[in-house]
Image (cartoon, rainbow, N blue to C red; front, side):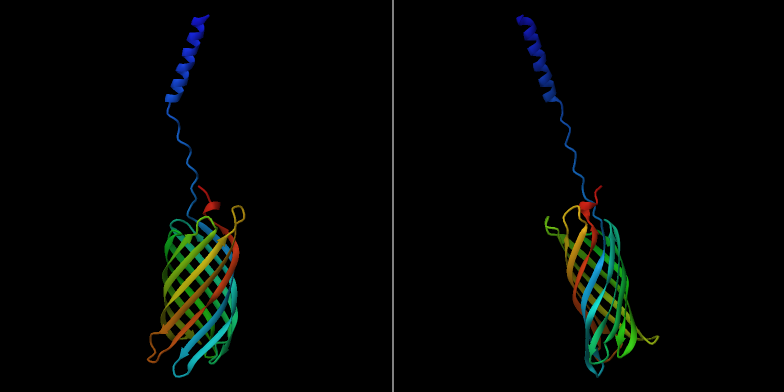
Length: 235
């Protein structure tokens, strides 16, 4: 009776030892989020326009424009489109009237840092005449997630080269810059909504005028929409 029990105990001990010596498989790696982002939403900006005219002082205009934005970006490429319309009330030299802003940008790089190139078109009043400003833009953009709070900080800067057409003739060739700062909040996982607040500023200086001449527009903006971010887009 003792010998079978001893043999059984030895077999059990051998099995336990062999199991302990077998290499354990590594735990499966968690799925990593992609670097992409898809966003579509509504934007509204409180816009203030200023213009220094040759020998005529400074003109100002203010109003509200609203529209939509669309952004799609992967780890390497991205595209963004915006269109806003509205009107401004001017004081001074006829900056009042309808105002339309639309642009398309192509981005190269990831969401953390990317370079951009694109074209913008601004249509509005200038010296009581309907004008169109065509702008070529090159710049860079960066963003950071603030931990797991759902907050995202975005900063952008660009160089602008423009031509203003008044009644079909090119009268203004400008060079300038723009600055953009944005704070975006992404809703908790499972609810792909966002809200954002930001500030945009752009300025153009006339390259052909002998007297100082410039135009600028700036103001805060708000946005809301649908956003698919890394934690919702998984490999």
